[in-house]
Length: 276
Image 1: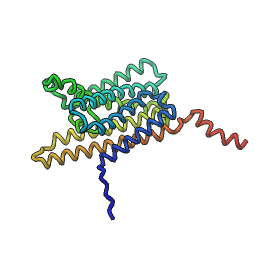
Image 2: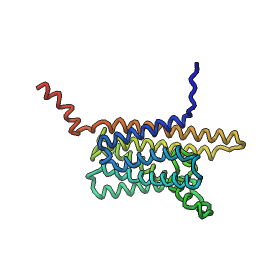
Image 3: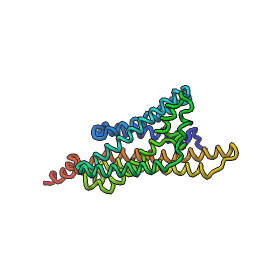
Image 4: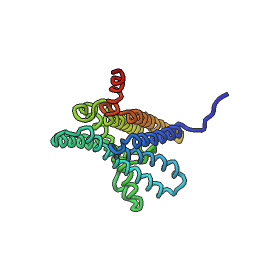
């Protein structure tokens, strides 16, 4: 007897991801981490809202208002992503001198801006503004594309690209220099930074791979086009798997207490007091 499931890989990943986001929000709120990482909490909540909106609204609304909602949520998520970078950096490098902050911030922005400038294709601005009614939506698409959509592969969502470049650099700094400040190994700040940078690396890899495929592949008929779109969907699923793994990583580490907290210290001293 063969089991038959009517769910696609994308639907299964969507369900698991949405459930993991809700669990992570419960952990953040229940363990009082939302107070320490408010923008990280907001970013996860916005991501969950985007997933829910795409499933509930696609096919049930007119195209223009649907795109306006999805693009607005995407842009808000991009802004929240920038604030998460600042939030994690402030937590990790609290106590650093102002000169160190200025030099490192300038370095991160220069590297991210340089890569962003060289990462083509860039949109043709005349085409974006050709239809005045659609110009606001086109400009929003330049900043950030809806999640889990092939629009993310059009090479115009420069806002998401910039944020992910900053996240990768910030994650590397936290891993290699965090222990000298306020983000030692197994600290919540470092665990958040590792998860964020892993997700960003996966996103950048998928984005680059898709653009290379588009430049090197010639489509001659409908079958080849469908094969290309199926390949793009598999790349999206691979990116979703990495994000799901990061959610599980955050749930596990944020549920545990950081080394050195009163709860952790009590767990180690209690047996000694009992024996005495």
